[in-house]
Image (cartoon, rainbow, N blue to C red; front, side, top):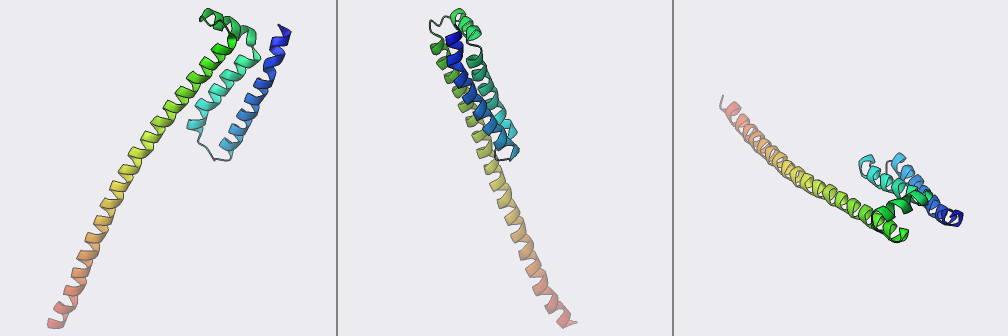
Amino acid sequence: MQQTVENYWMFGAVCLVIALVLLRLLFRERITLQGSMSFLSFLVFLGLMAVFPETTGRIAKKLGFTLMSNFFFCAAIAALAILHLRALVTLSRVHVRSIVLTQELAILHEKIDRLETSEARRSSNTPASSSLA
C-alpha cells in the first residue's frame, strides 16, 4: 500500500502548485475572489484525494466503483461540470448587466441631447428678446 501512496504524491504536488498560482493571480487582482474560490476548493478536494488514497479508495468502493481511478475521473468530471455551470451563470449575469448598462447609457445620452437642445433654444431666444428691449 505504501507504493500506492507514493504514486499519488506527485499529483498532490501538482494540485498544490496550481493552487499557489491561483492564489498569486488572486493577490495580484487578475481574477476575482468569487470565481476562484470554487476552483480552489475543487483543487483542494482533488489534492486531498491524492494525498489520502486509502480513504479515497474506501469511499470509491462504497460508492460502487471498482477502480479508484474511475472514481477520481468521475469526481474530476463532476467538478469540471460544476465549474462550467458556474461560469455560465456568471457569463449570463455579465450579459444581462451589459444590456442594462447599455440601456442606461442610451437614456443618459437622450437626456444630454434634450438638455443641449433646450439650452440652444434658450440661448437663441435670449439675444432676440434683449435686442427688442
